[in-house]
Image 1 (tube, rainbow, N blue to C red):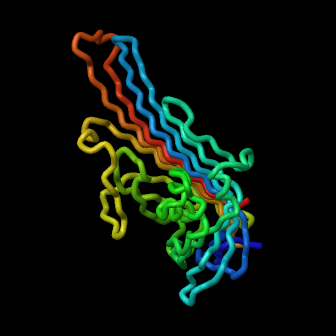
Image 2: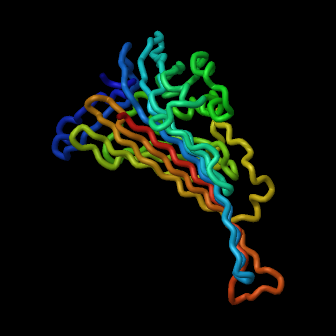
Image 3: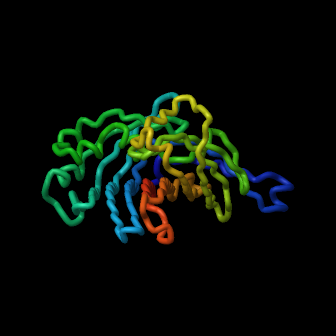
Length: 305
């Protein structure tokens, strides 16, 4: 059965469209009560700090990695008059990985480990709502919270983590009609844990529409525009942010089936690099300055399986 569907009402523009082969589609959320589908979502965050001292021939690297992967069944439990769907989420598989410079903290994969507190989360459920514009809210998580007895489990099922897990990113405003070359903007704040906080404008462009499949690419860039309801936060660098040169690389993609209205897959990758250089007193100028580099890498992927 089909998923909570993003239905694309396929339209074909008469003469001009037929001559050019230009297919258009209207984006609108639509749900069918009782539908059940399976999805896989992955969220990974990496923080790196490296310090290179060429004059002393020394270097140091500290890396922290956290990854959560979840396979879940999603059932359309009910529909409200305004089109908001109540979705029942049941955990089928779970991966939790955490590592720092000292070694691995947690390495859990439910397919390999059927014991422990994280394993007890398999088969448990929670409910969310999905509005017509893609807005997600937590409705009920009492069932799964009964099994959240560790810090890791409680983190996975915090409200904000649940919302980020299930929000399909990049959906245009309801009723938007798109075709090859058409683009639209969405806005988001830096992911949780980012070294500095900012707002990003994400521009989505339809690269190709062929055989009922729409391929969409995303590029993101920092914006100073104030966005209503967007909480940018404060970041973790504070006043130190001014000493770094910063470069952000924000990309993503989506693939939609315009005939069935299904989200095939969606992904985002943000790499923020902060670099500070200083020539040490008495250091060999030929060997170059000391270099402090801080990286924040956030990856997200969503896929129907």
